[in-house]
Image 1: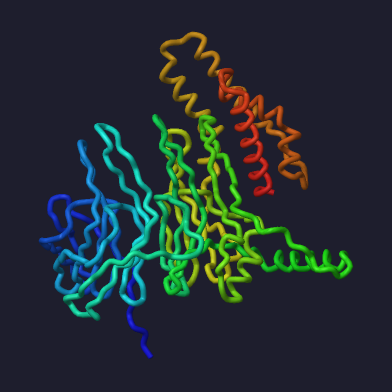
Image 2: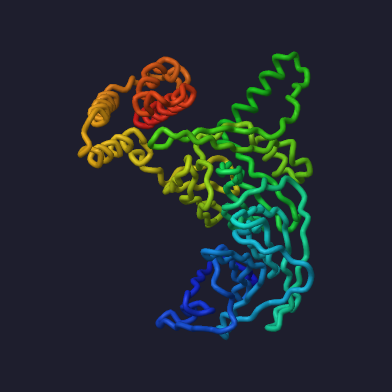
Length: 456
């Protein structure tokens, strides 16, 4: 029995800056290109979302910003793929507030789910306030497949463990009637700066059960067997008494430090929900996920990021690129990871970042050479000092303390701490704070140790 076509998310939309409508390439005529300028379409915007539903493209939200003002949208437009015509939908009920960057997911029944997003309001002149939305809505088609479909909004109140507020997350359709959310960033706005907490977690939304839950890695089967044997051995050693498991733990916060080329250290917080938070999980499969997940450390995982691109093929999630911030700069990523969503055992690295692009010592050396070329005409003591630092850098790179066979990272860091402190101080200058120099030194030592282990 043939399966009924369902909604997909494999569409491309480009807006022409000169007309209200887009330029379309007809998907039904592969031998020729048909460009259409259809009136009645949405205004120019970015940050909107679009899905394919039946024979229509449904577009929601977005924003437009000029030099003087900005506007966010919550309108809904449909583009008919048969007649190539636009229509503005007027769903009944109370819909979402204007926003951009939300999650827009189609359901097998032909409905559409809207989650999250970002918007800002002008409080007073030159003062704007941003809002991270965490509400959820269902856009339901009530026309039973007719051309004159009627739509209606309804607010959803999902159960389970919901994602923490964030923007810049990526979404994809997952197996078992689910959609997923990956990564993102939560910006904490202060008076004169913005600090971002980046994420690399996965959340699933079960469409049928209207329920969120965080993904839990089970780890390789061999490690799970070792854990079971260890628990059995402890139970036997205790004289057959029932092994008392530790009390359920709350969320675990992991703090990571990323070092930029100039020695800037960025602290990234990652919040991992505890298994006890999702109390209403049902089914033997989900119980196994709770039992096995969370306790095993991840040997490999994508670093926290926002604005990554994700795709799911044959139950495998692929994550490529994205960005995170170091100080006032943005670092763009080019790595590729994958994970089997059915097994949820561990991440795999398909494409690593080029180590040379991450080695900030080499880059800072070239930066210093460029600075010397610019400032060379001035001469004086600064040129002599910078050239001395460059020679010290070259010597240091050739004489890094070697990693001994089987040496653990903490032992290596402690054994070579003074060397890396001197090297970090030489790069950061005498005015850098001791605490910051220590952080950079430890980060350099850990990076060198990891590279040495991978090369061995």
